[in-house]
Image (tube, rainbow, N blue to C red):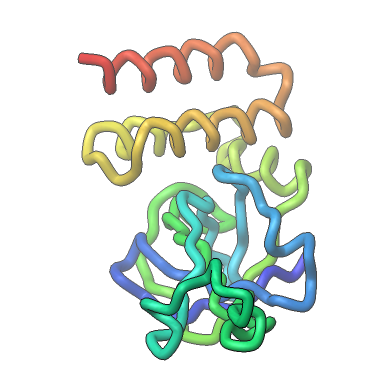
Length: 171
C-alpha cells in the first residue's frame, strides 16, 4: 500500500515520510510498521507528527470561528519518522534515500522475507537499536511485535527480546 513520499533526510538511517492525505489507511499506520522505499531500502515507522502551519499557531482552537480559521487540509502536514534498517538484501543502510521517493507499507510476507536475509531468521538490527539508542523502547517493542505478527513461529524469541528492551529502559 502506497503511504507517501520521503520529504526529509536527516541521516542515512533517519528519514521523514510525508503521508498521502487522501488515503485514510495511510494516516493510521501503527508504530513499528515496516516500509519499503522504491530503491529497496527498508525501514520502520518510529514516530508520527502533524505540523500546524505557522500562520495558525497561537489561534484559539476552542473559538467558535476556529472552523473558519483552521483549514480542513491540515492532514497535508502529517508525517512519519522512519528509521532505516536495511535493504531487501539484508540489514545495514549504506545509502540514503532520495527526496520524493515513494514509500509503501510492507506485507507480512515481505516482512518475513526481510528477516531471513540468509535463509535463517534474524533480528540482529535490534541490538544496534538498543545499544546506540536509535529509538525509544516503545518503538523497539512495537517493531518486534510487528515482526511477531509476520513470523509467529519466532514468538518465544521475540517475547524475550521485548522483555529485554523494556528492562534496559527500567535500569
